[in-house]
Length: 272
Image: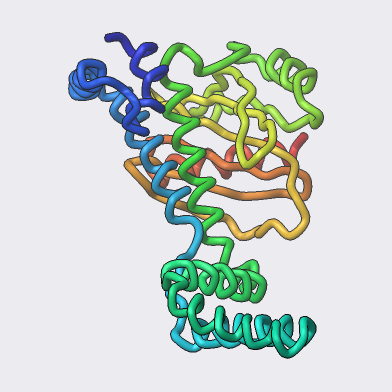
């Protein structure tokens, strides 16, 4: 099994949908191929992040009592509207039906109501870490995928006058592209990517034998302006914004190298 076949089957492997023989072939390939193993770990992290993104809460006993009380009141109200005879019948049914209502259904209803109440009252600040965590996982996965299957760039060039027009023609925004060869970060090229539910520009730079993916897209109102550094799975991520654009740099270079890259990029964009 080669890398392309392993990547194409990765989703099915993660979901347990493949036959045992194919599973063994993928596992054998992952043991022998470090790049595919990293891609597998990144995609598995995405699955875990999605599974843990929504909070879970245990419904309190008081909520169960309130639901049962509401059911009784509703039954009683219908009985009143249908007359005395209907009321007696419904009350009889209430006594016979309510005890038979499985607790798991009551718990599910209670949980839905409770989660809705809590979700509506949560502030954006409480939800932000989960979103950033998921985005960081996406960024790492995109970086790892770019190093595999010969898809580091869509347009390979060290000339920013070639890379920028190509990206501008494909996207609905014109992001900055600068040459940082003099700073030790030569431009390799660029490609299109998709992150955070929208297309982005991915600029590729090199630092010795390592690559840096710089993802760029227009800034949105309310985006935090404080630079953010994240270290995960052996990769460094650095986030910053200017008045127009969001920037996420991802690489396996050292934190100092990534900080130096950020400073060099900002210096060049200010000049332009």
